[in-house]
Length: 191
Ligand code: F6P
Image (cartoon, rainbow, N blue to C red; front, side, top):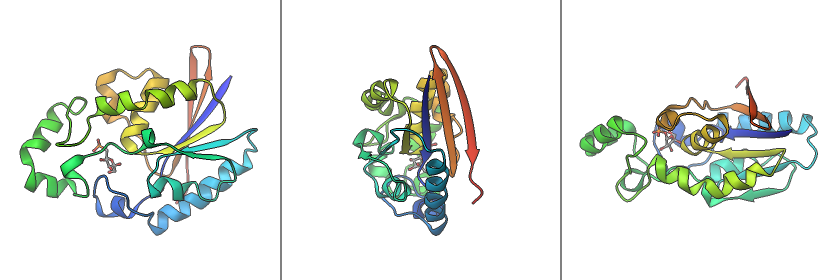
């Protein structure tokens, strides 16, 4: 039996503003989540706990209070939205209405100008999935789109549904794998 934990980073200043991409710091609420995530995980006393984050400051800061070996992996960075980085969806609608319409139409295949698609992200996380397959007690702290791709792999989600999987903030997702069976539990932190 294998147990894997997943979380999005705590709320970032960009989440508050509704901006996508970028490398914003955590908001005050996001910093509170980092504290309660550490408390929760540390209380589990998991043998050989490891923490894997993206290279972006919001996931690193979310892991800050956890006492365990850490790796910061570029494969776990959020979907790169190229020319659309750092904009709100409203600004996107004003500046790139056709792009947004195309994305709404085929979110899985849609690639941001100079950026990535969900299919690109699915491909780039494969090395991490292969490593996770052989691990237990890893807490992966990443981002909405990337976690959709990773969870879909473990939960056998049909590919068309991947860009719409619900991965809320401030929630710890625990997946237990045994052979071909899996079980998923979520713990929503009261913040
Ligand atoms: O809004 C937070 C965020 O992580 C953005 O950085 C990213 O572009 C987005 O979520 C991915 O979600 P969606 O594909 O639904 O826009």
